[in-house]
Image 1 (cartoon, rainbow over the protein chains, first blue to last red):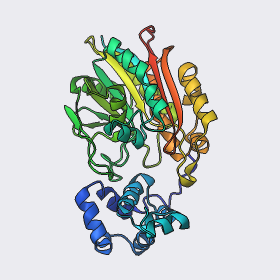
Image 2 (cartoon, helix red, strand yellow):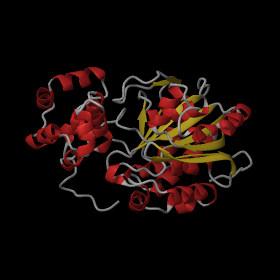
Image 3 (cartoon, rainbow over the protein chains, first blue to last red):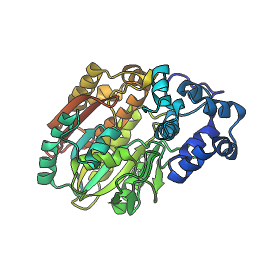
Image 4 (tube, one colour):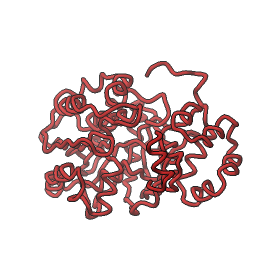
Length: 100
Length: 281
């Protein structure tokens, strides 16, 4: 593969672990009920927590989120109709208007 | 001795599994993909494999980043599927084939392939969807999952995947019972996921041609080339390449189908009959 960015490897571990936990329905419910508390329990760094709060995919990847695990976070928000699921303004507006 | 009677490569896009679960194969826009499976079902009904070795990539179900094997071999007595974040799937419990599995593990390690063995593991939709496509009314075979890491770089090379496939094929053919083994490679083909690439039909068709008649060309690709041409998730073709290594040598093409898009993916299937070939790889 293209040379690994050795300093970036392993970034986002806590974020990815949180996302992996969303395989379980009970965890998805707990996360949606209190995202900040859930993030704290998984020991997310300030940067990771900000990325979750913001929710955009590029930002989450940028802090080391792995797409295989982020897909579960994405899905959790999508099922909840959360506007952060939207990648662009049009879909965001659609979800905010309750059409998602 | 055991025999690899055939090889199947298939896409496993979740939309496929959903359509099967809802019995909507004839209603969905990608119905031609399902229709393409008719000759596959006819072939397995006639060839009657005993065991399916299912090569796939886990999607963050069974393996996490804490411990991520490059290659993992299932030696469990059975495998269940589970929620992958999309809600509980149609539940499956697939019987395993631990005796052959341990034999393969032993031969692989002796052959200098370093694998993880799994006596307990959850079966990802990637593998389950492939089995459901072949046997939509219930899976009658025992299974051995072989999981290739596509989650955490560094990923194995296409060459390495082809070689481990060849080694699995040698191991199967050295197993002293007359079992008929179908090997399945599940993944691909080109993916369009946001900024991660776009469906590339020319690339997909070329890969399918090479799967049949020039697998060396696929084994010679680099992962960077695959990502460039097929998107990041296009790396799932590693499972196809490994499958092709297992069947080895010249094969007869029984069926193939290609339909794009299925979700964001080029949906493809190929079935090879290996019974005319008595090669030793």
